[in-house]
Amino acid sequence: MPKVSIPLTAIILVAILVAAAIAGTAVYYNVLVNDRNQQIASLNQQITKDNNQIANLTVQFNDLKNSTSSSEKLTLSNFSNSWEGVVGSGIWDWNMSFDITNNGNATAIINNIIIDGQSYNTLKPAPAISPSIVNGYALLPNQTVSIFINETKTAFMPFHSGGVLYVATAIGNTYSLNIGESS
Image (cartoon, rainbow, N blue to C red):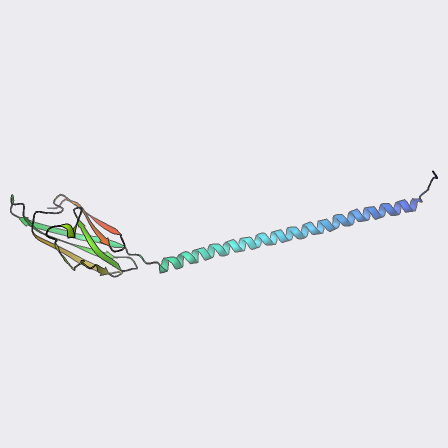
């Protein structure tokens, strides 16, 4: 095989070209990586902005939901009662009164009063309630009503040893008032 001699300048020129190609590739990939890092940083900033916007929208949604949702919220207070009867006869006349306030933002329809664990309309005879709740009594928001209950000639005498009075509404909520020892 014949011996081929490559001039030294050609070798140096090839080495320079290879080094330039490697350096150019390194610079190209360095620029590409820096560009991608900037894009990632920009996307992370956008994600942070989007998360803040989502949090803001969630707060606005909850505020809107709370301002448009309706709810009744009843408070029972000022309970008083009295009874009379002949001892040993087991027949009593009694009455009670209490206030109901609707602190909610929706009308409450009062449709039942539970006295000593019994619905008022299951008592025999059923006591008179004023104002009537037979067809439901509409208690508007921020309104208070005084309820009067009167029963005559009955063997049932409620709350003679304390207990709980319940008021029920048409949407199924019940509100209670603890009755202490009565005198």
